[in-house]
Image 1 (spheres, rainbow, N blue to C red):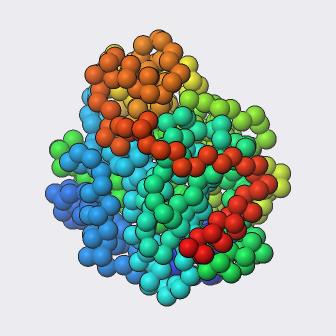
Image 2: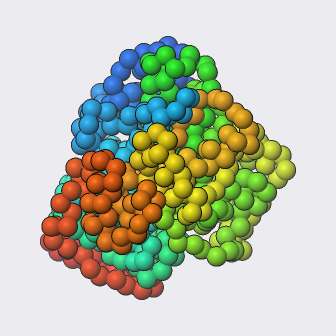
Length: 498
Ligand SMILES: *Cc1c(COP(=O)(O)O)cnc(C)c1O
């Protein structure tokens, strides 16, 4: 199984190379040359297996330069770090409505599903391609990726990790999780600006020859743990297959039945994994893409025009406060009939004019599969309160965006297809807003809000978020985004002298 770039499909590489490189040399994203299919028998067998086995099987089809045994070793290690019996339980909250909880990992957000796996995939990939340089993982985060990547990569041999986050664009809890990160190979730095500024600055470093040479002189090669890395996407495909297997195993559906997946979206990585899972054989009726008021994606799927020339809003679902959804490039590539030239042109237009559009035929293809919607902060809080009152189910702000959009979708379509609402974070990651939603009272301090939320709902605080207050702060630096490159080079020097 080879990988090609969305901007140049004649260049091929192995899965291991795609993971080591992160981004293709032409700036495009790696995609599989063709997608493997799971058979009916595969699904029937997988339905009886546990999560690490299911994930290893899915990954072995996608990454043919890794053996199944090797992958099973990694999935077993990665998902043993999750709390509870099942790393991603499917909870039935209402007739035909299921919540897929992807936040039982070390940082309580869905990013853990992939970022506990990526270090294993990457370390093995480095050996497979004969990489001698150390790997410097560079991450731009809107909050959850950073912490999950830091936890995944801390003290992993042959790697260092540097994380940049927008100083005012993440929740207090997220910030504290990162500032208190342990490990000898980690660095965390806040940026003045929003997530798009931060992500753009980081992307520019990947493309900058001169800076890459300086980094190389320090004995490092850059790689990415952002969701553009195929090593992030592949493990995400597994939980869609697994959710379908759970529904089969519980007798809720039969093989071949279709389900909807409703996904709170930002960078478009999570929902894109659902799309690939469908291509691999999961029965899908609609993919419902949910946004907050930064609803570039909603507009795109409705009009065929992707346009970032608009105001950026800070919301209570900060991990979705994104205008440039990087992973959409992979979907564009697919729906254009894998036209690499056209995809490259569109990405160039996005960079220079902040917009591009797709053809009527492409738009039709998109609309035949994707439904869309968005929720503002008020609606999101109402949804959290509704879910608590109606089902006794506590949702975080991101999950509530998805559930709210799903409710609107059902009102409009009367669609009765079983639906999996993807839950991307534990409610205690956003305690102030969730507490306000369920109680009507505002408490700004994250720790006080945590206590109150616990009293109000009786819902337990997850293990990884306990005791955060007592941990020492290690990283307090805030820099201008123009200084990101200097910071990276400086960190390489320090790290290589150690
Ligand atoms: C990252 C994140 C999202 C958005 O996922 P994408 O893959 O970027 O679309 C949604 N919710 C939470 C809690 C997240 O951390």
